[in-house]
Image 1: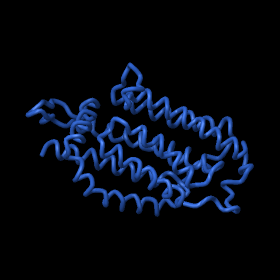
Image 2: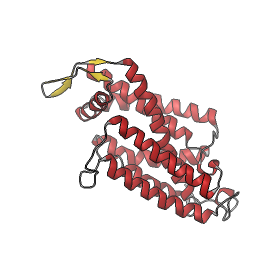
Image 3: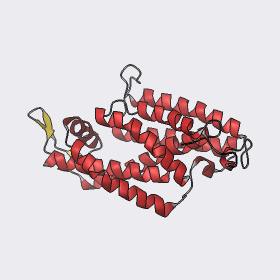
Image 4: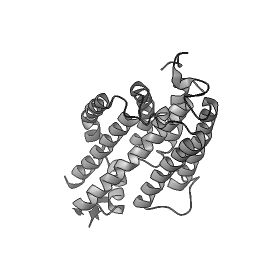
Length: 254
């Protein structure tokens, strides 16, 4: 990833309309760090810095969706008065993005097969599905969660919620933060800055997922830049999330 060229209008000092690129960039940095810090505290992934009152999975998803969508969108539209396309909220090359997302989703199947059956993933995501009432009647057998039944109606609701969650997640990091920070720094620096809170907010996840999120966030950044949209990142992230839930359920009942 290279620094923007001088003829890249997305980095012009005054922008297409509304606030200057300097205000856009610095306010994006401030908002991004503030919202990320709030989520780190409220989500409770880091024991030494967590809200004493923890949320269930529905509250968790709704709180994250609202915080990742509402403040940035309101700030952009009401205060900055900039086009959302300046922040990657545009279809871009929709056909190419969909094809790439499907290829990545299929290519990721062996990774899901390798990790989703491991105890760390089974314990974490089985509890998530139990908390969201997708799984019920699960018991302890030989020190592991086992058995139970699937409520398929709740499973559909859960996946629709995750669709919105991943949309909000990718909008915030590969849309709002990445494109906003490019107004005041080179693309490579914006990619590094946006991946740090993304990585830290994976605290509490299974170790393999936590560490891979660092590489994943860096890989997705140039994809968003290439397609001038965060949407391919959203599709890839959601397909992987959906595949993980399916794999976790498969290994749970195997």
